Length: 85
Image (cartoon, rainbow, N blue to C red; front, side, top):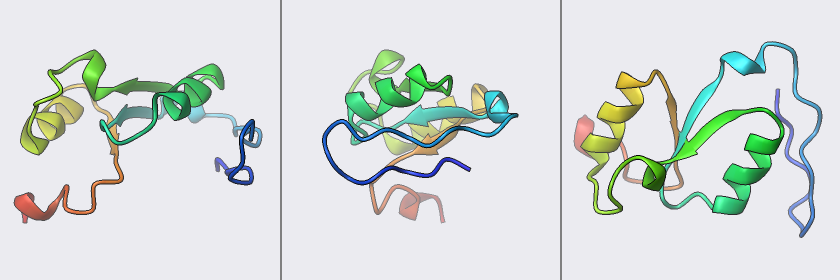
């Protein structure tokens, strides 16, 4: 499991377990590019929504993309899933 380091500048993530290469993430716009870059440097397959879709894309479009690409959406948007219930 990925264990976050202390929340401070220059913090690093703990070693990743074997098998993490199967994990594919799609970072929503509210996830920092620095976080995406740090995870990518650790070998995590992660892309930001803005690398693929327009920044004005709806939550539905983001979820559809994640399903098409077999990715898990990473977001800090507290109401992201509200519209899908």
